[in-house]
Image (cartoon, rainbow, N blue to C red; front, side, top):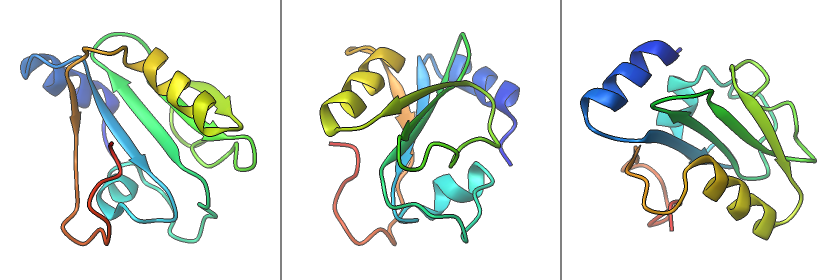
Length: 114
């Protein structure tokens, strides 16, 4: 599983504000492996994990699956609708933030980070 302190150091060294992991339905194998996710867990709603260069990480989870990221450190933001999800993302990484994100060539859709 990803070492959060080492990730923060790398984020700062790259001059970034954070690192965003975002997926649903086990589509992003890279994020799940890096974050130590169980392939057997239920993942039907989008979730995000934001590691900020400074401050606590943020877990953004749907109210239906609130415990999906419980194994990770950080504050929890629950959402119930897309607007609330986007609001939580914006609060975790305000517009204009420089954020790293990974992608997988195996993901069947063009983008999850619109």
